[in-house]
Amino acid sequence: MHNAFRSKLPLLLTFCLFTSFFPASGSVLCPAVASDEYYKIARNYGRDGRTGTDGREGRDGGSGENQNIFVNGSPVNLDLSGKDGEDGEDGRDGDKPDCGSQRDNVNHDINAPNGGSGGNGGKGGNGGNAGSPIVYYSNLADLRNISVRATAGEGGRGGRGGNGTEGCNCQRRSWEVKTCKGTPGSPDYKCTDKVYRCSDGSDGRDGSDGKDGSQGRLGTLTIVNSKEPLAADTPTVKLAISELTNKQFNLSKNKWNLRKGATSLLAPGSAIADDYREFEQRLEEAFQIVWQERQPITSFGNQVVTLNLNDNKQVEATFPEDLWVEGNTQSQTNLTTFTVNHAIPKKDVTRLAVAEFADAGQNLNLKIVDLAAKSDTLNTQFRVKFRAQDSLRGFSDYKTEYEGDIPNELVTRDYNRFTLALGKLKIPDEALHPGVNVDIEVVATRSLGIRSAKQTISWQGAIRKPR
Image 1: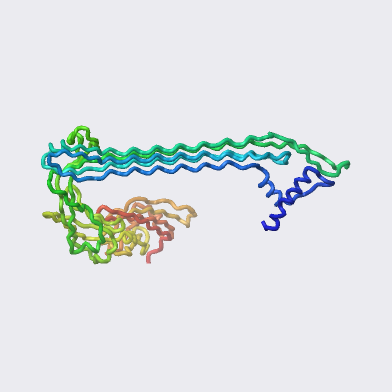
Image 2 (image 1 turned 90 degrees about the vertical axis):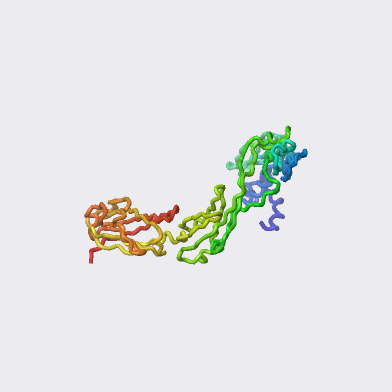
C-alpha cells in the first residue's frame, strides 16, 4: 500500500464509521481495501499477553578422572565420582494482557485480548560419569587396602514451566446496531437491527516442565597382574588398498576377561560398578596381503580396507561394499597372509546385456553378453519368465508360458557370452513359432564368495523365421 494512501486511511475509516451510525440520504459505499484494513485494526482491541521466556538448561556435571594405581599393600583412597548436573531454570510466567477499553456499538464481533502463555522449564543437566581405575598388582589381596568411590553424578532437575495468565473479560457481552438504507420517508427506506457479540480472551497455557537430566555411569574397575603398565594396543587399522602391497602391518590387542564382584576385591564401603575387567594376555599378529588379481592393485587405490585383530588372534580384512574380493587366508607363527585371487568393482558385476535373439521352435535361443568381461570369475545363474502373444489369432494379452530357473545344461558360455536355450524349456510349441510376439524377462544372479547381486534383463519382439 502506498504511503500516501496509508496517511489517508484513518480519515477514510473515520468517515465510514461516522456514516454507518449517521447515514445521509442514500447509502455510503466504503472501498473494499479500506474495509479490509479496518477489520485488521479494529476487530480486536487492547493487546494480547506475551509468552514468558523459556528457562535455561542446566549444565552437565563433570566426569571423574581415570587413574592408574600400582598397589604395594599401602592404603589408598580414591574419589573418582562424577559431579551432579545443574537444575534447569524455571520458565517465566506469561505477560498479562492489556485489556484496554472496549469500543461501543461497533458493527462487528470482537475478541477481548488473550492471556500470555508461560515459558517452558529448562532441561536438567546430565550427571557426570565416574572415572575408572586401572589397578596393577602382584598380590591380589593388596586390593583390599584400596578404597574407591566411583559413583555416578545425579541428573539435574528440570525447571518448572511458567504460569499462563488469564485472558481479558468483555466489558459488554452483546449490543445491537441499527443499519438503515434508502431515504427517510420514502418506500425504499428500511432499517435492520443486528446483534454483535464480544468473546472473552482465552487464558494462556502453562509452560511445560523441563525433563530431568540423566544419571551418569558408575566407574569400572580394571585389574592387571603386572608391575608394568600395559602398552597401548592397535587392534584395528584402516588404510587404502594400494598401501597393502609388499608390506606387513602389526596389530596388537589386550585381551580381557569380564567378571563380577568388583566391590569384593576392594576395601569395604567401596562404590563402583559390579562388573570388572581382568587382563588375560596380550595378542600380537602381523598381516600381509598377496595380490594375484590380474588388475594391478593401484587401480583400486582409493578403496579403504579395514584390518581387525579379534580375540582368537585372527586378522579379519573387511573390504568396502562396492568392491567384491575373493581370496584365502593362511596363518603362520604371528603372521596372517591373505591372498587376493579376484577383485571386481560391484558396478562391473551387473553389466549383462542382450546380444541376440535368434531362431525359432526348439532352436530358439537368447544370447547375453557380459560387457565387463568378468564371467570367467563370477558364478552366474539365470531365471526366466517367458510370455507369448499370438497376434494371428487375435490374442491381445500376453500369457505366461514358462517361469522358472534355466537348468545349467541349457546354458552355455563362450568366454563372456552366454547362450540360453529357451526352445529346450517346457514351453508349448505354438508359443515358439515364427511371428509370435514374446516378452522375455531374465533375472541373472551373479556371485563371488559370500556376495551376490541380481540383474533383470528384458527383451520384447517377434520370433523370426530361421534363415
